Image (cartoon, rainbow, N blue to C red; front, top):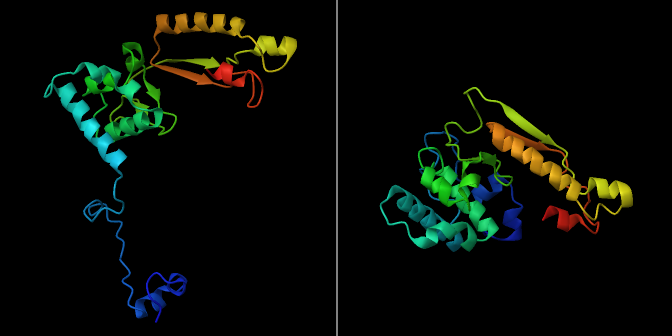
Length: 209
């Protein structure tokens, strides 16, 4: 008969595989049994190291271990992707919510950024909210909206090319940011295009920076 791993076995029907001696595992979607079976994927060394680092960060924040000077530079030592993975792990363990403010603070380069409630564009998670309150807000609040900042718009309308300068828009944004900091809304929503230049135009990367 067909041997496991052969092309014929891969194309065989479930009945043919059973007759050939294949063991077909039964999958259960019972919520009470999820996580009780063996791991379906062996974690990579990178993932194991990030989990160890996450536990170390929690120990630092809990005061179990002394806060080392390098702890404030975690976001600088890790690459962007690893930093996102670490934040995702901490979120999953519930270690970045309001009960762990020091963990949340260590994952941001400044206190102002740590106090800003924002979403991660990669994981679509609200950073700083625990999983019980994730995706909802029950307390009264008000928000402000910044619409279509478009850095370089005035210059692009005058000379084209996506806008070689964005001094005018930058000055307007400074005024807006000042108003936001004065009013301190619970949420700030930014919509529309942040840059006037489009991908491929000369000033696109400069405006994004």
